[in-house]
Image 1 (cartoon, helix red, strand yellow):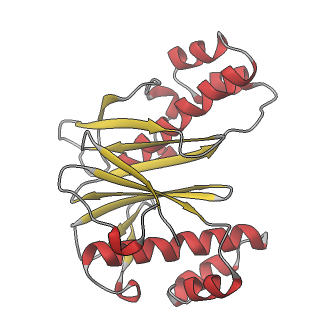
Image 2 (cartoon, one colour):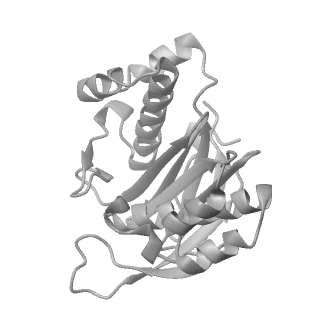
Image 3 (cartoon, rainbow, N blue to C red):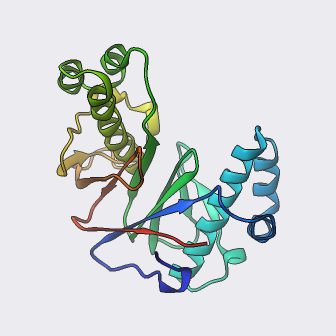
Length: 236
């Protein structure tokens, strides 16, 4: 368990923090919501059902707290903007790149010093036709891997491919404006060449795709310029 005042960012490693965003008390939830800007409060107030709204609000508040800790300012002073395709970034500074993902009761926050980064977390859920889904969402070679498996093994392979793919797309800053079928990520920790939004005319950059299983029935991945990732659980 990592506490807020223990968080630090090494210059040559990324940091991924797992956060349980469903277990806070009403009093703690009130404190966390108080860290949001007026615009953020208005944005999240439109989310239904209420439990999902609470999770999104908690995630944003914790993100503010961690960015404040890493940059030496209060959570209130953290200014978050949106890039060309909606990827959030820290305004007024290139000291910390970050990425956010959430699935059910957990959120994943990823950070890297002065570098782009992407992360994803997913809860594995039963799928009626995982083979058909693989054919429309995965690279043909990845879909073939899933097709050779059955039941929970096939679901596991699909979700492990998917979190790595989404982490890479987030690191690029493009999201699903890039067809995920054309992006091959595989299942094992590896390097991948990615062209970032705004890097047109430049050579693709080498990112490291790293995966983990942060909690029961969950899979997660990070795409980082750094070959080392420190994974931890953040206590609220």
